[in-house]
Image 1 (cartoon, rainbow, N blue to C red):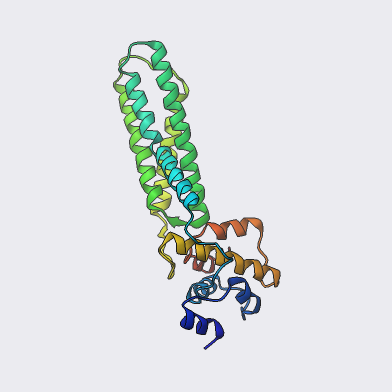
Image 2: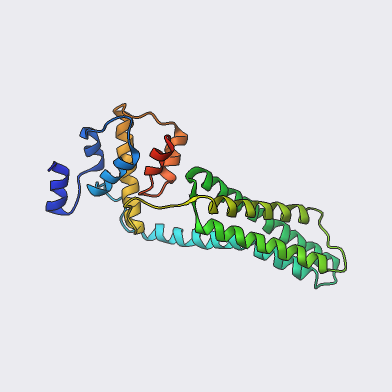
Length: 242
């Protein structure tokens, strides 16, 4: 039994990620899935303080979640503003409501493009992206249904173009995610605290492997590895590249 596993059994806490990586016998080319499983099984510990509860971080995450929720609701709000515009007689009020609707569809486009870029990096199915795409599609259909049923003509020549763009991107997001495999983690931790801990440990191990000359990674490859959830690095082995 190696020293790392003995330490886990005796103390329940693994060795330092950085110190372990300095002496670990790692064959090249590196099998990222095996390396990650070793990091988790040995319970490697990152630098002091990483993975501990952080009240400020928690508040930031909550606020970020609220903002993201509003972003995903943007197409619904866009459709609602269009419907509202058909119910008022004032041309000035209609222009204001249509402008708000245009802004909401622009936000929707940005969010959906970001979702597709995330899919491009991970090639994994995301339930959030699928649901978000469905919301966009339904909202765009509702927008055109309301517009076609309106006897008058709404101001804003960009409204139809942006709504259509949002709708097509929503369809693309749904199709791409449904055609992909589920994001199955290979023995990855479940809690957010453990995710942060092992994510930091992974980064330290990779830093040392780069210093030892065992791997050569571009900045884009490092960012791609950082975006992957703990327990999913085995996908790099299946793809034959990072």
